[in-house]
Amino acid sequence: MTGAEDDIETMSEDKLLSLPSGSVPPGLLTLLWSRHADILHQRSFDEYNRELSGASSRHLMLYPGQSIEDKRRIEEQEQRRRYAEAMLDVRRRSDRLLADIEFREREVEKRRQEIEDRALRLHDGRRVYFDGTGYRDETGRVLSGSDATEADVLHRERPDAPTWQERQKTIDEQAELERLRQKVLKEKQSAAADGQGLSAPEKEQRSRGAQARMSSYEQEFNAQVKAEHDAMAKVPDVATAYADASLDDYAGPAGGEGKSSAPDFARAAAGLPTADKTPEIVPATAANTPKASV
Image 1 (cartoon, one colour):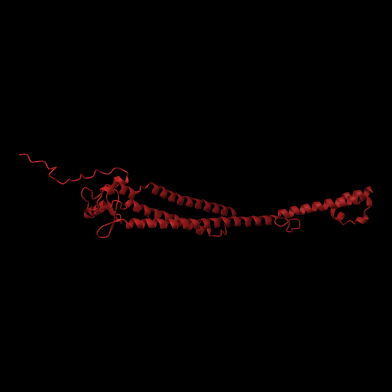
Image 2 (cartoon, rainbow, N blue to C red):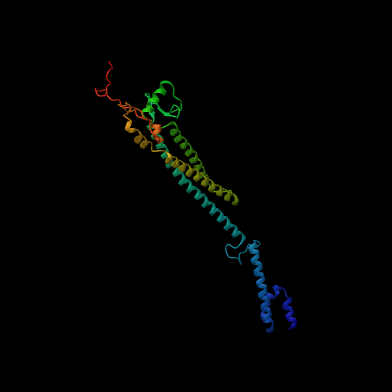
């Protein structure tokens, strides 16, 4: 018995696994089965590790997705999915921002057209604008001589005419919006690329960069809109100030008895009292005409 037991303990694994249980005394069957189980468990464990490490091409022990190749493939698929979603988000954000920019451009163009429609016009049709010290035409040329004199007369009749600064502000806004639009378009076109040939770190860096740039473009646009709204809120109601402060002493361009032909619009718009009215001329009568001395 002891010799047979020793044989089972020292027997090679292959021989032990091929040993018929009928050739083993009944008292050693438990030992045989235990040795069988130990050997099979160890072999399964070793095969599992080989498959897990990629040393074995067989996939007997692993579930789908557990091997190194499967994990690598799944990770690559996940990276492609994240990259595609990030680029899709960039394209969607760029579409929304481009729509906002287009709407804003229409607003600015409308305001620029209104400014040009309200501009002072010389007899030859040129639009002119007061720049704070003098007058300029549409090309920016400073007027002089008879042109400047004509523009000054027109401005006295229409002190609420748009200024050169107002006109230039719309032109500058249009230029800023166009620059921003071009940057967003470029970002959208870049996001449409599939990223073929890029490594996983390069895709990650590219998607992060695109997201960050889109955020900066959105912030830039929102800052422009806010600045414009804040500036509009600070502009005094010129029409109201003009009406309240000057209509009672304004008889139109031709003037009138006891009334000025051009109210001090700058003071009215600033909320300051206007200049004193021209004293009313009282017709001479017998009651108020002094007697001549004898």
